[in-house]
Amino acid sequence: MTSSRMTGSALFRHLGPRLFSAASASRAAASVEPSYTLLLSPSRPPAPLLLRLLAVRMGSTSASPVLGGDPKKEDEAKSAADVEKEVAAVPPPEHKLVSRYWGIDRYKIAKEDGTPWRWTCFMPWEAYKSDTSIDLKKHHVPTTILDKIAYWLVKTLRFPTDIFFQRRYGCRAMMLETVAAVPGMVGGMLLHLRSLRRFEHSGGWIRALMEEAENERMHLMTFMEVAQPRWYERALVLAVQGIFFNAYFLGYLISPKFAHRVVGYLEEEAIHSYTEFLKDLEDGKIQNGPAPAIAIDYWCLPPDATLKDVVIVVRADEAHHRDVNHFASDIHYQGLELKSTPAPLGYH
Ligand SMILES: [Fe+2]
Ligand SMILES: [Fe+2]
Image 1 (cartoon, rainbow, N blue to C red):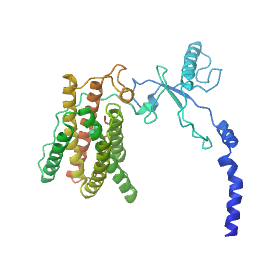
Image 2 (spheres, protein in one colour):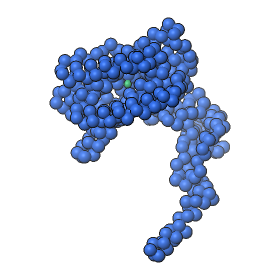
Image 3 (cartoon, rainbow, N blue to C red):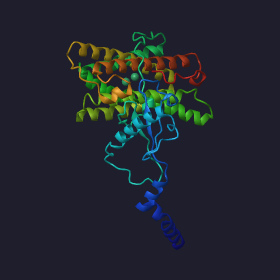
Image 4 (tube, helix red, strand yellow):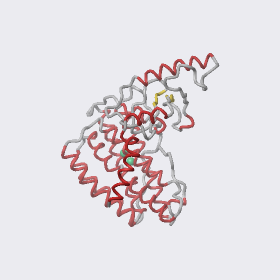
């Protein structure tokens, strides 16, 4: 007992100053390589390697090795310095990082037009231009018993949803996205655990399903800007999530082909709902206000984009999810495992 106390106090004497002293923390921070300003073009494909990046040492007055020498490049260096100043002028977040002991120092990022990147929930290389040319009318005709059950289950779920929301499509979208982001996460998690258990590759399906979950969550982050949930809607989300997460988890364990088919049909219904949303926007029943800033950056929309533009790209996303999930179900129907077919990664 005494020896463990002595060991503890010795450890504290040794580590205490490193863990708790602000002076030590700032010394550690000073030894960290300075931040960089990254400039990138939102109009280009969102692959990190394709980003036009200019690295400029923070606080350095001389031209960086990347930019030095060439007068034309020096001009670029000046404009990059201007951008750097602008990024540095952004007020610090409310909760300032207390200790930089761990060397975690986020890059300062600016868009190519010089405006600072304002989001922490996604990075510029995760933004994309939606493929709105996707066929919205594609439908999987249910032929097997299991497919028919999946189809009618989704059709049945539509009734209470229609009654509850009527034509309040902003609110409806926000609430349903809280559910839509669950299946991808559950499916991805179960495939992840399967990959660990069986010492096998996933064919990219873990990431594809996680991408879907993340994309759905971004739909929610967008519609939160359009409609705010009331207390009873928050309570409803809590209850629905508790039921749906567990039901989908069990469903996916028992029959992934059924689970993916259900999601395929849910996505078909989502396309229908967003089409109705668009009709109301066009008829003036819902005000077509400006697009939320987060949506403009996530889908690389023009600065004057409207809510209608947002609904169009979200609907296109749902059509992509429909294809991915019906495709996954079809793979299972052919007696194969998902890993046997490369996953549609980055399918937007
Ligand atoms: Fe969605
Ligand atoms: Fe979806």
